[in-house]
Every structure is written in C-alpha cells, then in structure tokens.
Image 1: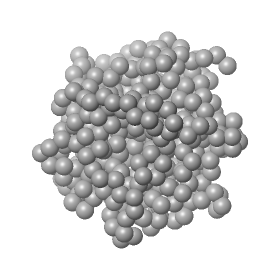
Image 2: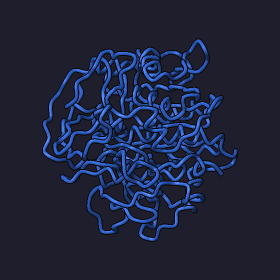
Image 3: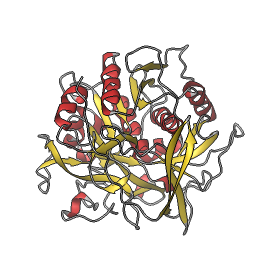
Image 4: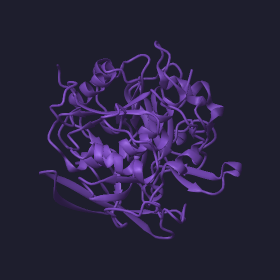
Length: 421
C-alpha cells in the first residue's frame, strides 16, 4: 500500500508551558494552555469555572512526522481526578442526561454498531467503559454480551502497543457513544500506529466488519495526496463516517476535509437560555486565538454537490457540530492514562457524539453518502449564531451567523431528523 504522507497542521496557540512526560512507555509532548471560561453551566457537575481560565493539555502527541495524525482531545488539568465516586455522585463534566436534554436525543439504537477508530491499545478499555456506564446507570456493554468488541486493524486480537494518550482518547470515544446512544453496540478498532495508512486500514476493517457508523477523532494537515486517501479509506457508500474538525481554531485538517465524511465542529454548551430548549451554544473558540473548533476552506478536496456556500470553491469544513469546549467539557473515565474521572473536550468529543446520533437515526441508505443528510434537513438542527474561532477573509468560515458557518456547520442535533435520508 502506498504511503499517504502529509505535514502536520501548525497550531497557533496562546502562551503555553511545554513539557515532556513519559506516557505509555514513550516520550510524549504535552501542551498546557489557559483558556477563557464562560459562566458555570451546571453547578453539580462543575465543568466550567467563572471569570477565570481553564487549563488543558493535549492527550496525544502532536506529531511532526509526515503522514501521522494527532487525536483532537484536550483534558482539563485544573480539576482534580477522582479514582472512584459514590454511586450516587455526579462526575464533573456533562454526562448522558445533559447530552440527551441538550440535543433532544431519543431512546433507540438497539442493534446498531458504532465503530471507534483510534491508534494504539487501551488495555483497560472494556473495564473503564463498564465503570462509566455503571456510574450513570446505563445498560452493561461487554464483550461477553456481544455489545462491545475490540479488534486490531486486521480484524484480529493482535493489539498494538499501549499508549497513554491514545488510551485517554479511546475512553472519551467509548464514553461519548455510550452517553448519546446507550443501546448501541460499540466496536473499538485499534490501528497499530497513528499513521494515516494504519488508521485508514482500521476504518476499512470497521466497515468490513459491518459497522454503519464510524467515528474518527484525529487529524493532520492537508496535502495533495488526500484524494488518494479518500478513495482508499473513506469512500464507503451507506456508511456514516464522522471526523473531528480539529482543535487548533481556524484552519482545515484532513480527513475532516474529505468529501465522503461528516466533518464535526465544536461548540461551547451552556445550560440556560435558548428559549424553550433550555440550553444555549456558541462557537468553541479562544479569545486569545489559535484554539477552538477547526474550520475553513480545503486546499485540495472538491466541493461535494450538497454544499452550497458561495465563499469556498472547494470543500468547506465543518458540516455539523456538538459540544467540544473543555470549559463546558464531558465526564470520562480512564484508569490507564488518568487514573480515574476527568473532564475532557476537543472535537474528539463531538465526532463520536454525532456518530451515535446517526446511529439513533437508523442505518443509512446503501448507496448514500450520509454527510449529505443534514443539508436536506437544516431546520432540524440547532443553528449556532454567535462566536468565532479566529479571523479570516471570508467571515462565515470562522464566525458564526444565521445558517451555515465553518466552525459549527449547519448546527447541532435537535433530535435525529437531520441525520437520516
């Protein structure tokens, strides 16, 4: 197989403390950044801090090696990690009840399989998933029952080497699918490395095993060979493939720019406001610049027929969005990397949420590209109309407004009507 090579997207960041720590047996660069936080969103969960900054670090190594991807997860470092909680306690961060309320999610998904594609191994994946689901009173999802499965990129059990950062990403992905679709089956496909070729092989394996919904929470810079990777890994009619738009603010990542995937942007989600909905959202972006949901106009990928925005001649990113701001982040449980409960954000959270919403909506048409579905049902989404992820010459690609915009796409789920034909 030919190597799909790319240069890593350069991330513009606020002043940061860079350090190196040993993680999962390898040296991992960790960035800690201060973000401005909105007012508290839910007192019991304690995800947001008022009038102060939240501190985060990237869960995964930010690769400089061409052809390698980085996961789009940011973990809060200003909150205490809890190894265990009282069974009746509410973990810090949003959980299933909040997501169901904010996005009007129905029950359902029974019999549908959502695949999660990540690099490296999380040895504790199944037991950590069990802890998360038990804490929230969700039905068990185990390998014994057939609800949970874990395979390598070749479909076997020759799992790759563990990695602490990607283990944290895996926990986030499994927990977000569980939160949005508790009755869905979950397939974890572990690539042997973070190269696009290995991750792409894992996507193909997920589809070969029958998954109709595949979430990818990683990205890197675009390059001219993206079309080759599109045809090799992402051109799967009848399969809803979601991809994180990135955490570096305005700027486009691949594979979010693939015309065959649903590119998922990110919001700050706050309880209160929003009329009868009881929730409000704005673009996840930093006033300091350089951090927030990725967006923009692709350099290389052709514009799919269903995108009609006039300021970008090629593929525009994103398509839809969900909560991603670490300041209004999600509760996850990870015993391998974190040692317990933590609050995580980034578009690594929004991609599996949207994959699970597709699963709630039901299997796509066998010849369809499900990324087109939301464009036919724009009124069935929560339009996000405020906030920015940076500055750009074509304003809607970095600033929210009525209708389509880059950072949040067409909006966030309001039930499942926008995610079916």
